[in-house]
Amino acid sequence: MREVTVSRVVAAAPTELSAWLEPATIVEAEGSFAVERVEERDGTTVVVASGPGLQLPLRFEDRDGTIYYTQESERGPFSAMETSLETDPVDHGRTRLAARSAVELAAPLPFGDRIAAWKRRGELTTLLESAEAAFE
Image (cartoon, rainbow, N blue to C red; front, side, top):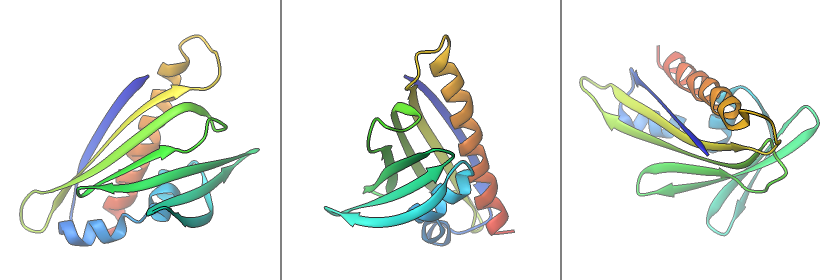
């Protein structure tokens, strides 16, 4: 598995940013998949996302203030994917949003995990840019 980390300071108070960081909003803001439906299962939220030719269930949990989500099945583009989003107050109503993800590509390609990490970094960067734009 490869790990990527990105962060950005957003002009929003931690409570405002946390309210914006809903599972469906996160998936849409990453830019690769559309939200098909949202389901509540066993105290977690599952967002079923779709893209060209595939459906991808993502399971979201709150872990002591950290948003944690994983690809629920092995039928997606990754054989494994887990992501965490953390918010930390900075100053004057601003918040640092940090996204950390570990991925492993499902296809047996040379440098596949490196490619998956590159793609995932792009998605997380798009998420941070969307969060920043939401509070401009």
